[in-house]
Amino acid sequence: MVENIAERIDVRVARDAELEQTVRLRWLWTAEREGVDVAGDEADYVPQAADWARAHRDTHVPHVAVLGEQVIGMAWLAVTPRVPKVGAIQRVSGDLQSCYVLPEHRDCGVGGRLVRAAMATAALHGAEHITVHTSPGSVDMYSRNGFEHEERLLYAELDGERSGVADSKTTRP
Image 1 (tube, one colour):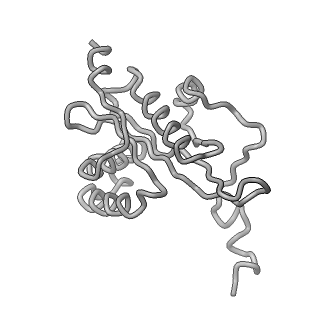
Image 2 (cartoon, rainbow, N blue to C red; image 1 turned 45 degrees about the horizontal axis):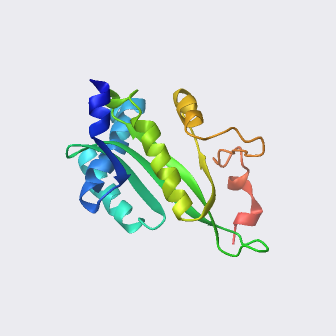
């Protein structure tokens, strides 16, 4: 039965009319992980986030998994310009963000298809590489779909205290 459903799922860049359903998945993800109290009011979030998605379509490409007319999964590709280097003035990189599949549609390959679709879009944009910040439970899925650990890729949480930004004299006018 799972294979039948998987075959009927369409994975592609989201259409404008699907953006409300797409951003609603981001709200559901937050509600699932952190609780409804943290997620806030869905009715306020969805239209604002859909407007944001429309305004940022050039830099944040939403990919969807659609079953019938229902968006059941999403993955966003952030396309970021990079500093020019000798021999390559126009450079970009990709960052895979907010990959989520509704719980009842997990473990049948939908997440992997979304990841591969975002990677293909990154390649079409000429991205040199694509990064992802994973949850602990999704590392294997990303690994199966072409991601590898990179020794030189570091991460810093910027919260004023740890980064020193809040006390830095260089940030003041």
